[in-house]
Amino acid sequence: MKYLRLLIIITLFASCSKNIYQVSKNTYHKKAKQLGKSLVKIAPDTIGNRTTKVIESQNFNLRKPNIVVIHHTAQDSCMQTYKTFALERTQVSSHYVICDDGTITQMLHDLVRGWHAGNGSWGKNTDINSSSIGIELDNNGTEPFSYAQINSLTSLLEKLSTKYKIPAQNIIGHSDIAPGRKTDPSALFPWKSLAESGFGIWYDEEDLKTVTLPVDFDTTLALKYIGYNTSNIKNAIYSFKLHFNSDEVSHELSEKDKKILFLVMKEV
Ligand SMILES: [Zn+2]
Image (tube, rainbow, N blue to C red; front, side):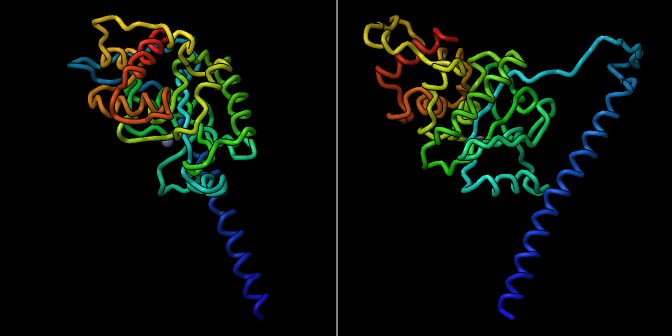
């Protein structure tokens, strides 16, 4: 009797989670079809007091992403993340999820707008979801990122960068685009080694020993030049340090941080 009850619970749980993914898959197909349909016809619009004329051109393709935003899931397993992104009520998603063992799961087509970035900006880009691909790394935020996971991430970035011509400085973290609101990926994320593989930027560490700052060096302008939103300067500094000096994260710039900032600016 005890086993029968257990079996019923397990069967119910399995069919329930299967249902979540089936519903998500069906809705994905339906939405993709609707989007396709909405592109077929250009409806006349009213601009000022004029109605637009429509003459279709045959020369086009789909717009491509130009930014990659890296996240950590802050969850305990890939299964948990799949479920989060499959459920309608969460209203969040990402194009890719990379598990601890290096498994790469694609959950959205590269050319659709995922819901991973939220409010944020990078340089003059103010709608990051529209121009980016989101990559979620299965990580609870306090553990190191596994070798297999970073290896898979590097391979994925290689593919995406080549396919969409994504510039190195546009491979960034969630915290970079949303200072004060997001702190992922965590301070344990290996930005330096990623940049050594050609993804993201890093400064010349040899130059750090000898560089002298210009007397009129404007740190706010430098952060802005790299891409940070500086409307709250302390938050911008925190995000910058989380990325480029993660051993000494704080809301203040030390002399060393200023030098790092100056050298990072030169890499953009
Ligand atoms: Zn995130």
